[in-house]
Length: 85
Image (cartoon, rainbow, N blue to C red; front, side, top):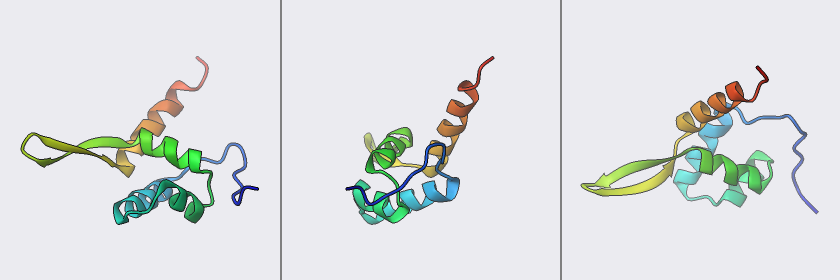
């Protein structure tokens, strides 16, 4: 049985996203982050996909990292497009 409860319509806040960014940087797994936020693991997976950016490590070397600010911008853009005209 699941250990989390997420009522429909409850969205992640910017502070939630900043916590996700910090915990992922510390090396926590998506499941651990989900447990800490009391959310579904799939929610965290979708959120991480939404906020991925390429960060330059060395010259011509990049790695994908999660950015809370980028995820918040993508969330706000998606919300603008989700309303009927």
